[in-house]
Amino acid sequence: MARKTYVAAIQEALAEEMRRDPRVFLMGEDVRIGVFPSTRGLHAEFGGKRVIDTPISELAVAGAGIGAAVNGLRPIVDLMFGTFLYLAFDQIANQAGAMRFMYGGQTNVPLVLMAQNGAGSSAGHHHSQAVHQFFMNMPQIKVIMPSTPTDGKGLLKSAIRDDNPVLFLHSLSLGGKRSDVPENEYLIPIGEADIKRAGSDVTICTVGPTVYTALGAAKTLSREGIEAEVIDLRSLSPWDKGAVLDSVAKTGRFVAVDESFPSCSAASEWAATVAEAVFSQLKAPVQRVTNKDVPMPFSPALEKAVLPGEADVIAAVHKTMAYS
Image (cartoon, rainbow, N blue to C red):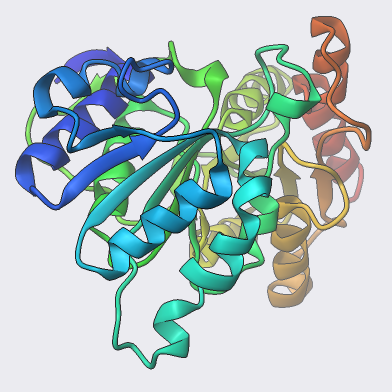
């Protein structure tokens, strides 16, 4: 294995899949020069017919990607920021996710939509919102949000090979994260969680950059004698209910940590599922840790105050542990 950054792992996944399958191509705003490093250098290898700069019209770009997908190609559409997905919402919700179902399975939609999701880089509200919870609510749209270079590469390759539309979300705050990435070919199945830390006292469920928040909190809690199990879902739709419920059945306590607004967050879905499925095995009420319910500030200090922090996770765990 070689130790690589998240950005390098994503670059590798894109290049390997484009070499493997001539139907795979990349399109988006400024992908030719690679404004985001994950697409940098691809134009030099694959040329202008497979790395295509588009106008600044997210609705049109998403529509072009959907059209290419249903006609036999396998497009990767880079829409840059998660908040820009709002501008393509109609194409994603009414077309990409519905076509295969409405046409009785007569067509596939092998489309990957890539975007930076969430805060952490002090880019202000228009570039820092977490949007994953909206797309979890759409049937037939798969949603992925890895936290490590290893997971990012394996999941992106699986997404590109999937015959359904996949939303691949990643955070600017993870670009420099490093992990050991296998040199050989590998895939990570969509919808399969990973236990990043084993524990017996409380289950912490999370995804994306808040995985590191949860792990930091778990390290502090361990010094207090509380062993937290940290589950990185990696995929939000479908999500690995079995892994979470098995863990909660063991620990009896559950804390959901999610970088989104409190109402109708991903954390809300996880908490509701746990409460419905293993209520009799819970030793304490479930807890949610999310963003504060305000637009994302530009100020680094205020942004940090809005996002879920280690202290917030620790407080939620302490609340569950207060129940005997």
